Length: 319
Image 1 (cartoon, rainbow, N blue to C red):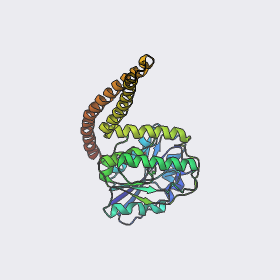
Image 2 (cartoon, one colour):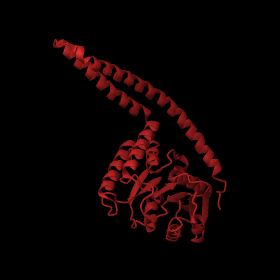
Image 3 (tube, rainbow, N blue to C red):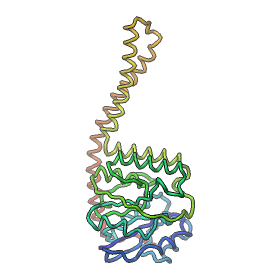
Image 4 (cartoon, rainbow, N blue to C red):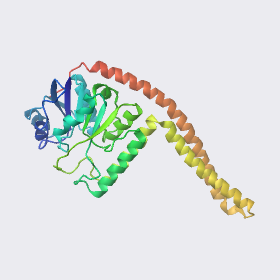
């Protein structure tokens, strides 16, 4: 079996060499191990440094497209290289390369198609208290949306089988971590988590310059992906909330009339109730339409998977 370890990198000339050199080149259970670096449109010497450090393959994207795009491009390239399993890690050496074996163990045992490295975010010393709370809450939300018991949903240290890689899609530009887990849960893939070590930070995170922005973007992504795969619960839930609000205002108006109180001063509440009930109907109909669209999406994903299987024999681009 072949293992390909991919590293998405953007402007990482000072870190990529160390990240490549510390990766294991012999892993139990695999006949060959290759390293693939995806240079996400860097303007510095990231690609050259990666190659000089011993990377087997360097895929250069012409412009900076973001982590999610680079990760998916690396996954496709790894498949074309004939990878049976793909491990993803970061160029800033956040994750302990020595734990790649632990990450692969559930796959080799036939227990999982995707394995996520758990950094122990609840007690990670280099995370601020706010970031720890945010990470834990976000992972809880993802567990609810995906049905998967993954304690560190935003971890980028992952192992995927060839079949899992072929079935996953990425729509976001910011990050792939949460999106792919929700997909995996809805596609009923076997997902496991293992505790892994981390290294001290080498630089501030460029993906999360502000926690507030990250929370808003990821919250929007969770809602969008959940609505994509489970449109009826999302839109029917919204319709139910709107209906409850509208009916409560209508009931209040009726009680005022029944009590003999002049309702003239409460007509605005009745108008708001009508607006909420109309919005509930629209949300209900939107859910039905979105459910029909999701059927078409499933068919398109099947076609895309077939196309990926055909492309898997083509060699990846390299510098």
